[in-house]
Length: 138
Image (cartoon, rainbow, N blue to C red):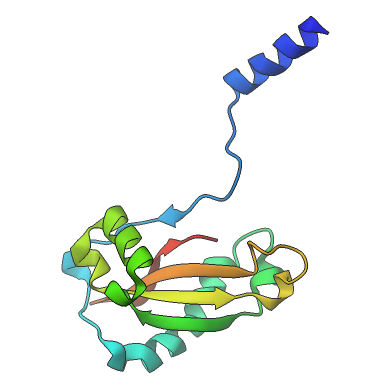
């Protein structure tokens, strides 16, 4: 029994693994970002038709992400203090000030995973390439 416990502990120490979901963050260069405002909301919603499948469709569970709904889409600011603070911590205030919070719901995950049924992304608009995701928690 002692050998089994020592063997298991050795495996965990030699081959550590992470439990839980990990956020994916790719901080953009603020000089490449376009200023946006609430007037850009319809444009962003339209861009999500391409962004969401590209962002979530590459996983092993892509089919579960094929149906999605936008719950909220709003500029990151003090109105969403927790997310604004988080985005500022990740990539700085200048990037946060040029970013949006999009909250999503994935109906195909209902009853299978409460965590996977909802997601958040931070998006910004590049001066050259349009809207893109720089953070996702899903």
